[in-house]
Amino acid sequence: MPLVMDVEAVVNGVVFELCDVPGDIDDGHVTTLAVGADIARAESAPGAPGPDARGWWPMPLDLLPVLRAAAGAAVASLADNHQWGLTGKGDGQYAHDTVADAAVLAVLTEAGLGVFSEESGVHNPERELLVVVDPVDGSTNASRGFPWWAVSLCALDAEGPLAALVAHPATGTVFEAVRGEGATRNGETVTPSSVKRVEEAVVAFNGWPPSHYGWAQYRSMGASALDLCALSCGMVDGFVDCSSAALAPWDYMGALLVCREAGAVLNEVEGRELVLREPGQRRALVGAGTRELAEALLALRRSPGGGPAGAGTPGGPAGSPR
Image (cartoon, rainbow, N blue to C red; front, side):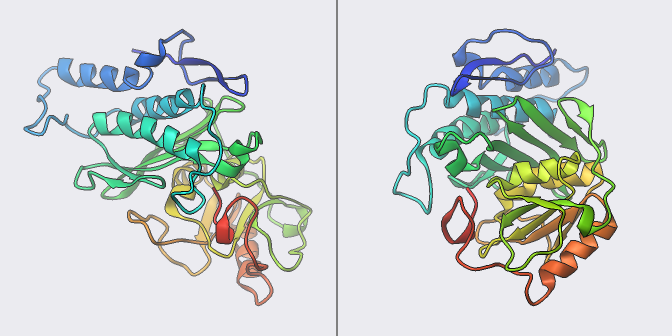
């Protein structure tokens, strides 16, 4: 059964479509479409067991349709949203963050998944799969009508990232990855750039370095999930986090799997584990399409003059992107 989702006039008149076959869906069905199809498949499969005593279906589900439904629900929830300012309740939390988070949470929990969300914390951590959620990565951009923001989702199993989706509503672009199966952009396989030298590279920054690394050009757009997905497909050649607070797991986890499956190289400045399942930890990422460029950028970032420049990065408090 193909996933069909057509959300019209989503944000600022932009049409966002996550689909195999175009079609119209009532708003009330957006959050249950893929989940219901997934359960129907599980229920009708020959010899398939039913739900356990908790009402959960056996894992793993067909995860990408569930992630697509969750992303579609987030975007649909913002179609008529008129509150784009800060809530005053969280550190840099916006009203649209909470609206989109509630929509995503409803889909994922109904599917029997645990959730680790930037906006609402950890839900059902005992479940077999845990989805790391940033319902709006680039919240400040979204609040100002700047269209570089995304919905980022990454499902983790005991071994790490299993499936991921990063959706860019402004363009209708969807990046997806499944462990061991590669990464795609709108269904087409992506590969990173082959640039090896900093002098030839276009580098995306989160925050800014105190000195010029010698890059050919740079970009600093304020949504790390999209910046890293841009790395996965060669839109940029490298990525460096120079923010004073570094990145939280929801900022990068979805794009982490996309980059890995595409063949990009990602490192952490201090060599720490990147897969995180609990709040309170942050990581500084450096990556590139080639090992040579990744190592050169990492050396520059680790150099005495290569770290954060000071007060933070545009788009969030203390250098934390939203």
